[in-house]
Image (tube, rainbow, N blue to C red; front, side, top):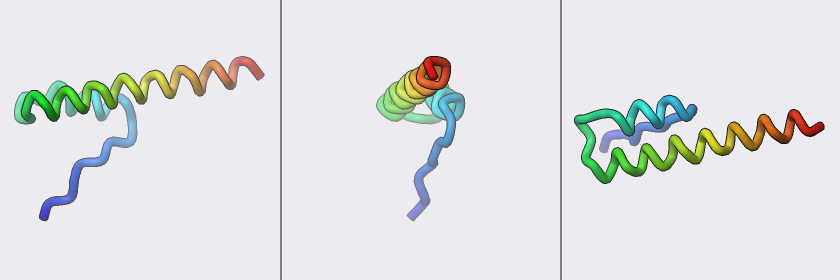
Length: 51
């Protein structure tokens, strides 16, 4: 069995979401993960700036 792809950064999720080789459903999941990762990074930056 092939190991699943693991993305560590938001830009990697975005790249997977734009991959035409993947099914539409997989691309949608990767797009949602990219958005979630970007929101997490923004929240982390805001917390740092507020200190």
